[in-house]
Amino acid sequence: MNAFAIVILSLCGIYMILNFRHDIHMLQQNSYRPERYWRWLRGGDISSTWRMIDVAMILLLLATNLLPFQFASLIIAIICVTKGYLILTRKFKKPLVFSRRVWRIYGVATALALGAAVPTAICTAGHIYSYTYQGFQIALFVILGISAASWAVVMLALWILMPVESHINNRYRRDAERILRSNPDLKVVGITGSYGKTSTKHYLERILSEQFETLMTPGSYNTPMGVIRTVREMMKPYTEVFICEMGAKQKGDIKEICDIVRPQAGIITAVGPMHLETFKTMENVQATKFELADAIPADGFVVVNNDFEYCANRKVGNTECIRYASSNVDGSDYRAKNIRYSAEGTDFSVETPEGKEIDFHTRLVGECNVSNLLAAIITALKLGMSEEKIRHAVERIQQVAHRLSITRTPGGLTIIDDAFNSNPAGAKMAVDVLAQFTGGKRIIVTPGMVELGEKEYELNKTLGRYIGGKTDVAIIVGEYNREALTEGLAESALGKEHIHTVESFEKAQELLNGMIKPGDTILYENDLPDSFK
Image (cartoon, rainbow, N blue to C red; front, side, top):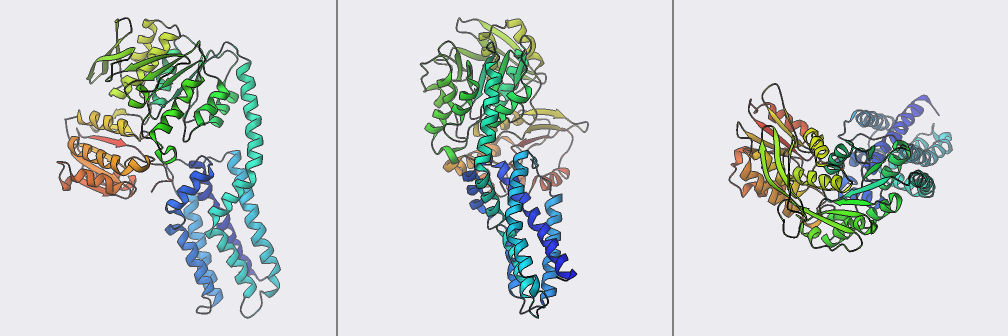
C-alpha cells in the first residue's frame, strides 16, 4: 500500500475513533440507559447536520467516477481532520467524564470498528495499485460508514458490556451494603422529590452538622451507582447520619436505592410534572416518589410537602407521616408563616403541631427555599436537635450554586443564577424573585423546561406568558422550546421589541453586553444539558 493511501486511511481512521467521543458523551448524559439514548437519537441526532456530513463524504466517495479518486479521498481526509479537531475542541456545559465505564465502552467500540476496517484494508491492499483503486475505495468506504453509524457501534458496545457492567455493579453494591451494615447506629435519611431535593439535602446537611458527623451524597450522585460510590469512597466508621438524595426517571428507581441504604427517615419535597416523558402519568410519578415512604420502617418517619396535590392526597400508613406546607396549610402539621423578604434575606416563622411559633432568619430568598428549609428543620427536630442549634445553622446556610443564588457584580448588576432548576413551580418562583428587583431592567435568559411529556408545550407557553407579565426583557435560548415560549410571551403585555431569540448562551451574552446597565437584574433560568438543542 503506498504512502498516500496509508496517510488517508490513517487520518480517516483516527476520525472514526474520535467520532465515538460525541456518542459516548451523549450516552453518559442519558445515564447509560439504552432506551433514553435511543429516544434522544430519534429526537434528531441521527439526522443531524453533523451526521449528514459523514453521509455526504460517502456519497462523494461513491461519485468518484465524476472526480479523480485521489482528489476525492484528499477532500474527505481534510473534512475528517476538520471534524476531528472540532470534536476535540468543542466546549460542553457538562464535559465527558472519562470514567472506567467510559473507557470500557470506548475500547469495545474501537475494537469493533477496527475489527471491521483493518481486515478490509489488509485484504484489499493488493488492489491498491489497480487503475480504479477499488481496494482503497472499499476500505475508506467501511471507515466512513462506521463513522456515519458510530451511534450504532456505541450501542452495540453497550450491549456487549452489559454482563460485565452488571457483575461490576453487583460487586460494588455488595461492598456498599457491607459498609452500611458495619455501622448499626447509622441514621439514613432519604430525600426525593420532583424538585427541591438537592437544595433540601444541602440545607439539612448544614443543620445536622451542628450536632452530628454527617455525610451527604455529593453533587448529583442520586442514582444507585452514585449512592454506592458515595458509601464506598466517603463513608467513615464514625459517620452518624447519611443524607441520601434519591433521583428517579422511572418506576422502581427509588425502591432500588432504598433496598441498598435502608433509610429510617425520609423527605418527599414535591410531586410534579417532571420526567413525564418516561413516567407518562402523574400517578406514576407519585407512586415512584412514595417508594421512599413505603420503605421507611414503623419506628421511623417521613416528612411530606402538602403544598403539592399529589403529596397531600397520598396516604402513608406504614410509618409516621409528618406533613408541612407554606400555602396548603389545611391538614399540615408544620407551617411556614409570616414570610418576609429583605435585602438581607428572608424572615419566617415555623408553626409546630402544638401551635408554637419558632422564628428564623436566612440569607436565602424565595418561597421554595423556605419550604425546603422547613423540611430540613422538621427532620432536625425529629432527630433531637435543639431549636437554638437549628436557628444558628439556618442563619448561616449559604446559597446552593446555580439554585436561585444571587450575586452582585462590581459594575452594579444583580445576577440570579437558577441554572440547575427546570420545573414549573421553581421557574415561576424564580420569575417572582426577579420581579422584586425594580432598580433597573429585569431580564430573563432561559431555554425553557424539558422532560415534561405531553404537557411540555403547554407548560412552556404558560411560563412564557408569566414571564411577559413580570419582566422587562426576555431572551429565549435555543430552538427546543422557542415556539412555545414566544407564543406565551406574545399573549402577554411585553412588547415584541423586548423579546429576543438567540441560538446559544454565548449569543445571549453578546446580546446582554449591548443592553445592560448598572442597576439591571439578570435571571438565568435553567441551562439545558448538551443532549438538548
